[in-house]
Image 1 (cartoon, helix red, strand yellow):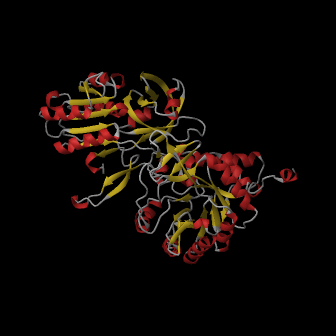
Image 2 (cartoon, helix red, strand yellow):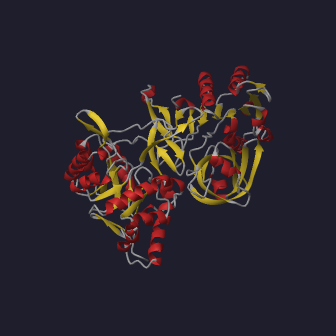
Length: 309
Length: 274
């Protein structure tokens, strides 16, 4: 067996494949062995319960899907009391995902979750409205200063590994990435879904109840891949690639571009066996290429000849 | 539930745009309940991307049948599949109809291809213990509505099961002219139905809402099978919400979202915030 274990800050993963937040739950335990994953990332929780967006929340588009779930969740207390006990049988690192209205709320969530032994790391979902000076100006992850504030607050509140989840909808992702790194993030998750919409021409109405949503799936992959490659040489902390990874070939592409680990989301809906097949595929690929470890794969894209063109 | 690679043993157009597919699976035959569904992969590539939820139409020896309508590209691709082809299926999914014991009469109301899961339901009702003993009192009354006569599906199947079948078409080309909900209301006004009668309905939302209204007025318990766009089909992505009234102590205090795939697709009609 090829060693495909990777390290994300303090976190050791037996393989680089994680579930993407909001696309995985213990329900999938009937269809695949959850403990074979590198890590389990849970659905984003907020301090207070959130009802989520009206239907339809899903729209299929060419080689992708849009979602506008609206962070529906039952809130922090329900999570701690009801969800955490159900994680008893999970032997792999469990990563909680959090979202808040401001730095203080993020910190409160992190402080509470950081005390739970079962939670190995916290993923900070920064795709939340950026409330500054009483007005909403884009998302936190679109503002380097706000990103730094939130990550710093979370860093002070919890000692476990922190992953900053970025939005791809920015003019220069490296500015946001550097802000997150400076504030103490242990890894970057590149990236969340891309804002998008679709219209039903028969009714003339948007195909999502929330009008707009986030694009995921194969259509998004090349966009995110380029961001990972761009960040790899500018950032010191590990990058986790996430965007339209459907099979091991996609995962290897991301790793060649510099991702230390990857997350699988939409692919699981299409093929619940996808995460497990990707893990096996990465191992097989590395064996065929005679790679001793992931160090020989991560960031090893051969761009030399292209530079000379 | 399982993810299965199943052999297609039949896939025929039974009426314009409507297909019946047979899948070989001892597992699904043994584990499927009426009202449950499966998620079917309609292409081997990334487009169309998502699976299609299709109601289990009938449980047959060694397998199941699906009845579906070509709605878009996904179902169009499924319709082109041939016997001998392999289909990637996840199921059975969802809760299914609640078939409680000590029953009275059963009233099944179908709109368009909403008839699909009701055949499996009628099958179960007929074949459960003591069903046919007293057909007069404990009969199964089926109401099928559609646009035109050629869109009326499965009337013969219900007939074979000994059900009392009523048909209505919007253009009057088959059965009585008008909405099937009018036929249902007229029926309930004229006959003396026994206690413990239950209504089961599947079809377009407008029809289900009308059926729910009639059931409420007559104080007849009513179960409706809903449809919604889905991604995962197993309750993970929270992509298929339906508004359910929240009523602690029978006082309605707003609504909450339930998931059609996991909490449903069958709901008590009175719980839905229509």
